[in-house]
Amino acid sequence: MKYDMVAFDLDGVIVAERSSWEWVHKAFGVDNTENLNAFCADEIDDLEFMRTDIALWKKIKPDVCLDDIRNMLIDAVINKGAIEIIQTLKNKGIKTCIISGGIDLLADDIGKKCGVDKVMANGLAADESGKLTGEGILRVKLRDKASTLRQILEEFNISPERCAAIGNSWVDISMFEIAKFGIAFNPIDGETITAADVTVESDDLRDILKYLE
Image 1 (spheres, helix red, strand yellow):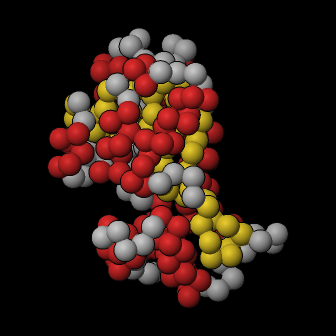
Image 2 (image 1 turned 120 degrees about the vertical axis):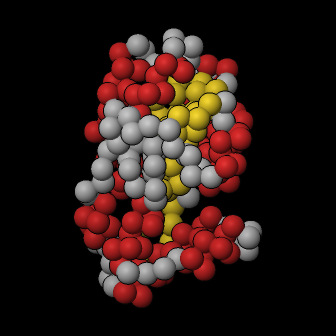
C-alpha cells in the first residue's frame, strides 16, 4: 500500500448524514442559518459558532442533556462499505482516523463500530448530571482540520507523505493540503473537487480503495 495513515471526514463520508449538528437542529426544529452565515463571514469563531448553536437547543429545552443528544444521533446510517474499507486497511497494517467538526457523541460511537484507530471531533460541555452548560469543546477547527491531522500524524510517527485524506466539503480542503493524496467522496461543493487529487461519486466507500493501493 502507498500509505500508512488514511484520514476520514465523518459526516457525508463515513455516515450518510451531512452534519450531526444539522441533524440535532432538525430534531429540535430550529434553524441555524444565521449562525452559519456569521461563521462563514468570519464574524464568529468556532467556539462562538458552537455556543450559538447550542443556545438554539436550550431555548427549546433548557435542561437538554448529553443523553438527549446521544439519543437523537443513535440512528446514524453508516455508509455502505465504510466498515469494510476500514477493516481492509487495518488488515494491511494501515492506521485510520476520523477528523470531524461534528459532535463527538456520534464520532466516537461510529469510530468504535468501524474500528478506527483515532477519533477527533468536537464536544458538548456538560455538568456532573450531564446537562449541557451551553459551551462547546473545541478539538477540531473547521477551517484548520490540517492542524488536527498534523497532531495525529505526529502521535503515530507517520509522515504526511504517507497519508491520504478523504472528505466531502470545503472544510476538508486543509487536510488535502497536508496529506500526500486527497479524495473528494461525493463532494458537495466545487472547491472540494478542485482541491482534491481525485473525485469519487459512489454509494460505496470501498470504491476509493483502488486509489490507496
